Image 1: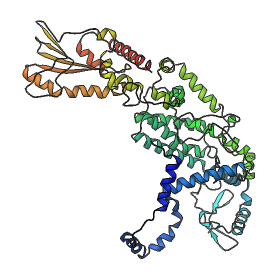
Image 2: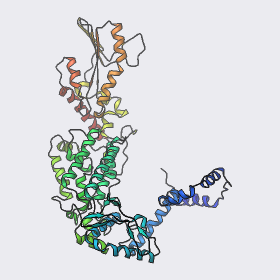
Image 3: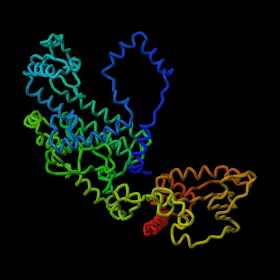
Image 4: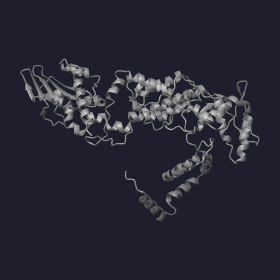
Length: 564
């Protein structure tokens, strides 16, 4: 991308504003709009729906960019001059906004039930004094006597206006259902359903593994984080949501059934996948143990998670508990004193949970210890995307794609010309003859088969003909990357399907069979692998074939990564 310099930018914009533009007068589309708006009942519908209008969406993108730049400069000035008060939540960075209002509302419902009438009247008088609409349409009243809801027509205000009554099912305030207090059980059910729905929709998408984790962190976990500290929840309920997440990931193929649980929640930098656990997230939001500590987000690629900051300031703090104690707003100070923050007491801090995950993972032989042994395999993609190095991530051999381990061991065009055929020293020094024949058997090595019909795939790697039994075997080995072994196995069977029928007809064979021998570059095999090698009846085990593949992969990786 070419970035214009200051002179080019100035010339571009000056030409836009200096050149006059002639607009078409009375266009047809404008007349059609006017006729439609003049229709019967249209104006009434517009006036009734005016609360849902969002004029900012009609503004051009360029206007939003320019105002964003100006707003940033204004904010920096107001911050330096200390002109922004704590109550300016819509303007102040790092403000909790709706979370503040929910906790203030919860405190009022708990401590000031008998004073609500007076508070409502005070708000009305204040609203009239500043010439601001009170907003009765968004308010409601519920009368409760001796713990039971009493029927009423609403509440008449001193100015004669009527405040509507709230139904027994409750009233939603900033997304939280409440009556005389927050309805915790109903809200927990709603949060669980919405969280599960979002996770399921993300897993149904076509995103890759890394982006699925980022999407869950930013879109699904945020639903739970919003209610942290407000809605009561037990540790068992949070753990159950984490188990549900792992179950859904397994169902949709985003997590192997036998995959390590600790690695799922580890930072990507430490070899994990960077998923934010629900229990972990709630603790980080409200835990008092976070005081005085600054953390970074577990997922380095999590674009939507702002739980943790690198530089904690007065306006950007880590937990709700610390946020309220640092606030200078009187109402928030009272929230802190009233001790209404839910889920605040935990046995472990956020740092302790992450540390325990890491210790358990590193002590597992086939997981953490394997990662330690392979952490020196730092491809360019890993160094740029995970470790944050400023470098070109394209392959140093072909330059045609991102340099990942998968690309190096099975996809690079330059290496495909020679290296992939030399998977181990013993194999590539052996040069078999094209044809070997005896009285009982005939073996063809990489030999094209002539047929009456022209076939695209007529050259299997090994063809074995048993003369006495009238049996022919097409043995086709392959060593793709481990994520593609099943697809490669199916591809081998389909490619030689026509050849199989042609040979059975031309050579008068009783049985012709295609045997794919597919081993992943890192040693993985399919569930049908044992069945295929048993048909060879040679006493070969999976380990015998996996070893040369792994040795060849190690040789290729060493060779590529040693190059500058």
